[in-house]
Image 1 (cartoon, rainbow, N blue to C red):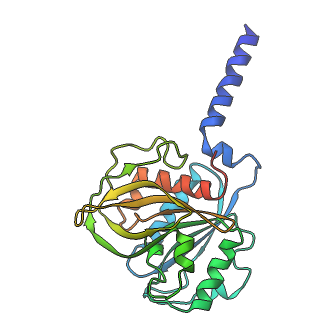
Image 2 (image 1 turned 90 degrees about the vertical axis):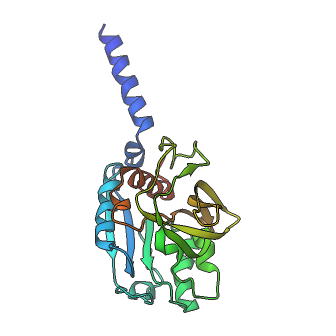
Image 3 (image 1 turned 180 degrees about the vertical axis):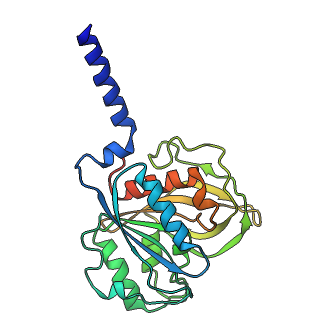
Length: 253
């Protein structure tokens, strides 16, 4: 009887371990080291940062460093990137900044060089329009998408196109966003793969809203949703965003 009980308990532990990204992420006993770069125009970045940290904490232990240095405008060159080793020691870098009119090519390439060398990245919402005024494509190739504009705010239905991918596996098939913006994706880069799409209410086209990308040696996860406070309070959004952070860091089984 005790042998059967022990076998049952062992099986239960194995099942929970296999199903839980938190356990998979925490095997080493060390928390992930994550850098969140945020700020710029148009969004409630303080709320977004706290919501993201609380959501990821439900899946894995993470030590966060938050950098918000660029002010609230559309153009900034933050001091962090002046250090060529700005990303050293971090397991993943989350970009949630919004600086559309920064165009300095050398500055942008200081950012992308670290990722191309292997630092995993997560890109949220306005990161897709950051540096959109520049002539070079390095940042867009890193993102995995090219976008320069968005549709109006609405409640957008999300269609999962890769339901077996661990980031969106188990995500509700009929999820509709809180009020948010649909970004018009001009190009999905060759090494990017759409996981979910939404249909534009203006032109009727389907655009990627959740995707993965390979940039040099780095995994990149991206989502264009994340405009409103309501979105950053939505449990479905926060779940797939958190899983995307772990996936980019190589910790989501």
